[in-house]
Length: 597
Ligand code: ASP
Image 1 (cartoon, rainbow, N blue to C red):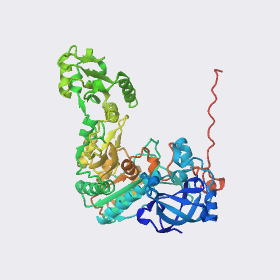
Image 2 (image 1 turned 135 degrees about the vertical axis):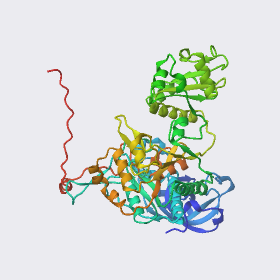
Image 3 (image 1 turned 45 degrees about the vertical axis):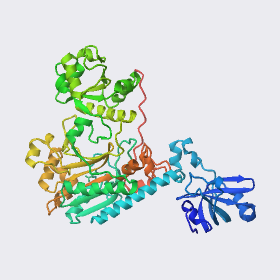
Image 4 (image 1 turned 90 degrees about the horizontal axis):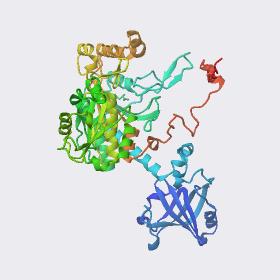
């Protein structure tokens, strides 16, 4: 039906006769001559019809926005005065000789070029129209280039693309499962995979050696701005390779994607331990573009007459830390400091103490702060020395449970980086390693920091003796403060796997019930193996600078995990429910408040 894409025509095509198909982006009538901006996925070209073309001109007069046209005409140079340097095809136009209206279009619910004028709900309802926008199309073309590069890279490295089931059992990655009732097995449910974790491990037991899959994963969690209930992972697993080997291959893949698609050389990724990341940046995904660091001052505060500091300083689970903002005195207003106090409140911090360093040599008069009166001069001096303060600096403090302080000041560090534009470079990748095996929940129980199939770096005996201290053989790749991917060396030995289940408080019965197939597989010659998975949507988002994950998923869900276009999730009819042996409970009516009988 066509010879060329609209958007690919250039001055090289002058004098060629072309046939184009596309949508009417704009139509203008200029004193008897009709201009149509015709759009397809490659871009827009200007088509001109004049009355000499008779019936075709009449048709051109009839077309409206978003009509679908087939146009034949000759490419010609534009008059010098009408050359448009902002348009890829701006040097030329097509002099139309034939026009065929392939389909008409009603007025769209929002003009594509002013999509901002309507709410996102409207754009999601008419997603197929929103996706017509050039900016959207650019994002998806980019995404396709990334997946193509991934496939080629992994294929060259000897990886096999193998699919794993969508209807399966729960695969614990720490989220709620999406469940699918089984018709043929009464009262039983499938779970959609939170990741292909167990299947990829079983593929290693089968001897496939190197596996990858661009896999859909499903997690029913409360949605934040950068989460979706279904998302895509680049999922990788290998046998007979240690951490260094796996990290080298996957780092090479990310480096290649950046080199080829952005012309950026990410260089070799540095490594940092989890402990160092938490100590210096309050986060296990530190944004190293920001040159601010947390400096612990817990040891200085145990004896001060200020409970806010001395309490956490004496608490083994407490943390007292300082965050120096060089030149912060002039950069931050009182109002901003108040705003930051509210900001850290989101993370549970009860306040945000600070000291303004006006004259570091005058410990009595040179420090300006609501809390400085509680700190004796030797402590003041020790703080200034430790953070290497200079006149004009502002020092923030966090004092609370370590988890609260790390999260709050870690987030404040990133916010300051953004607000004060402190970034020292555009891209800053790193590996975070030596994660703890477990985190302790408030009730004292242990929870896997990654997932329960991650190998510890210690022996089963050491793990049993002191699970809270055990480190894992996990690694995360972080870029600009975002976790791009993560994985680990896995447990390939049945008794070690059972020790980890035990540490997690999973009874033997439950182990058999949920993971019997894995425990069995580990008995029959499971090779040492490990792997990782990258969040594809997040990677694309970062690379194209999208502000929402919804911009890089063709048909995303809303914040409440619904699709407003198809109206999913939807109801089902009684017959279907009957076949599934399911009866729906009527939603309970809210209790009527009794007025003191
Ligand atoms: N399955 C893990 C995840 O989804 C990744 C991995 O360990 O390979 O986070």
